[in-house]
Image 1 (cartoon, protein in one colour):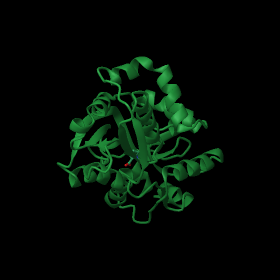
Image 2 (image 1 turned 90 degrees about the vertical axis):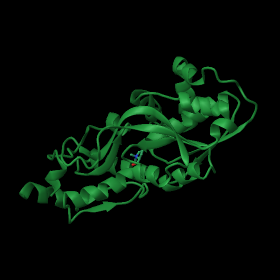
Image 3 (image 1 turned 135 degrees about the horizontal axis):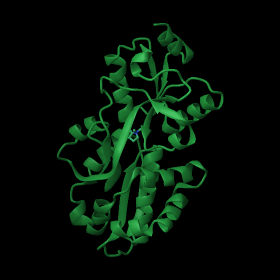
Image 4 (image 1 turned 45 degrees about the vertical axis):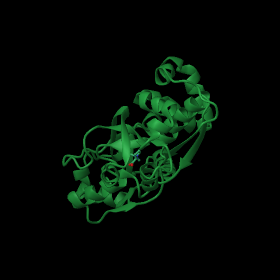
Length: 267
Ligand code: PBE
């Protein structure tokens, strides 16, 4: 219809995506197929490039469609909305899980226990993300958040003995949400005496590294839908320590000033 073609034209039939390994990119490919958005292209990039493009468009009140997710600081800086997904391609609300290599419990019981007890909310994570977006270095933002949230951190470290320089390595992807969580966990482990290495990789290599044991763990596994392919591929080769954050969501996100509400409006 007229509205749809004008929306498509206004954004050059482009969906501003992120890194190709991200689950939201694979889901968006399915969306393009299932909603028959034949003229549309999903442009690859990165989380940072996506938010830069979003900010640029937003400041000029121009149309833009991005692959998005919560928790993410963009929702506190900009007035945005998810496009409805009547076919349910993006799935329902899901959770972020902590995954560990097999044998971590045996090899590093203290780190395992912290990872297992790590659990926070979208609001907690949001506080860290906003500090980082406002210019604080991720490790400093983590440090400050920990200072302000001692009670919660005490729950994660409850019953955990301090260590002397044991090494632990965490893999993560440079998504705003995962930069926040991984830096907080790293700092908590450092405060217990661990020597922590953070390994920033793409989503595929992150899962591979946990599965083949070349890193110890990741707090960045979005399940059951977003990282379903990875979880299936490496089934039996990693340990799922359960959710560390509940109630996430992925989808197509647009500024609220855009006159569309559903993915179906793009056809
Ligand atoms: N994300 C953020 C990731 C998981 C965390 C939604 C961009 C993804 O799509 O794989």
